Length: 251
Image: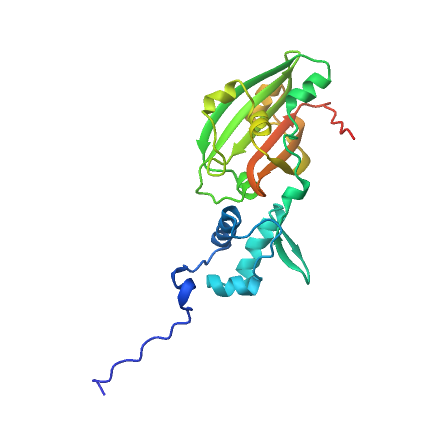
């Protein structure tokens, strides 16, 4: 009996084209894989993507893991999920308005005030938790963070922190942003669209409080914007406005 060779272990991996596909055991890895297929054009805007069950078999993971990854992408507007219909890549081209991103220069000049802009800091760094969610990147991906403040008649009007994904954007020399705000550069050079717009309140901290000339902890209005290019998020902006600022939305 000692001469009997053990039976080979059974493998449930499929052969053929999927042989080289690695097992994706985390929702972050699945999200990255789906994003890569959308970015490459394998899954075009408006196209149905495979079902959760099909993806779980292909990627060698639980269906719940696929569900989590797709839910994150749906929350960011990259895909659209409909019961009894399936999951589609968002067809953003049908509702894109080129060069229509709001820029703070227009806000200030609409007030009849003299516009001013100062870039206060820039750094290449790991993303914050909010930037990870907004840009659908993992915690190990380096992003560019640019901080600025805007003036109206030499008084603080707004301070801004914008995260840019250098893997999705062909960025200029970052020193160029001393003269032109990142949001204006995006609006001028790329067919980006604003896909998410949120308004919240929080206490001013750190450089934001300094740049607005207010006491730390003072409640300020915060506007968060996510801009997309070809349906994929490329920038995440947080803009902080001092107390008594009034937001007016035109028709």
